[in-house]
Amino acid sequence: MSGLIPKPQRSHQLPDSGSLVPEESSEKLSEKLSEKPWSESFSPEVTTPAFYKASQPQADQERVVVLVDGSNLFYAASILNIGIDYAKLLQVLVRGRRLVRAYFYTGVDRSNEKQQGFLLWMSRNGYRVISKELIQFPDGSRKANLDVEMAIDMLLLARCCDTIVLLSGDGDLAYAVNSVTYKGIRVEVVSLQSMTSDSLINVSDLYIDLGTIKDQVQRSDDHREQPSTWLHRTSS
Image 1 (tube, rainbow, N blue to C red):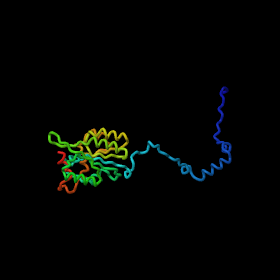
Image 2 (cartoon, helix red, strand yellow; image 1 turned 135 degrees about the vertical axis):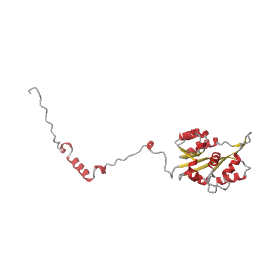
Image 3 (spheres, rainbow, N blue to C red; image 1 turned 30 degrees about the horizontal axis):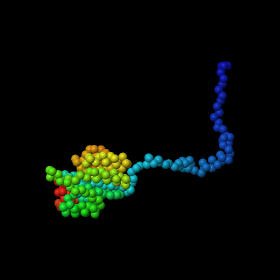
Image 4 (tube, rainbow, N blue to C red; image 1 turned 30 degrees about the vertical axis):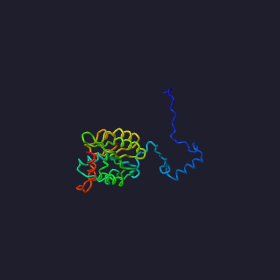
């Protein structure tokens, strides 16, 4: 048809490489390509931004602080009908990590020589004992509340550890635990489930029912008088 303009024919022939790349550069490029394949020569350095790096250290480098509520542990042990081996307990709670310090909180009766002997043994076998004199109430019971001491220590020790293991089921400690987790500290709660507040479990990073590890922490000579019975006599 006379009114149509014919399409120009496209050439599928590649232009001479010499017309695009100087001869000297082309030769150098050929040498580089012949020396090593691109897949081997190209190895870009990959860097991970700081905020992508895992905050949790290796197990053998993870710094752990253990806080033990003596009264809570005694009642849990009495329900489970076991005596606690405190050396085994510490090993189970730490689990091969780096122990910074272990604290044991309890009410004391200064006139109870057996209890004083037990606390002396604890202080010489890996625990720092934090004690408070028992208070006599009108109903005849004697108690010592160490929630404030535990909460304050938790906040202070968060600066020098990666993980806090809290052996307590007291819901009054939930606010302190939540505050510590906001600092990036991992908190593990260990207690008997029937004695543990849901509010405390909800703010923890890991919860362990004491009943599931009782075989690992109980004394083998349960027929003998246990240190926990000395605590019971001063807190009942």
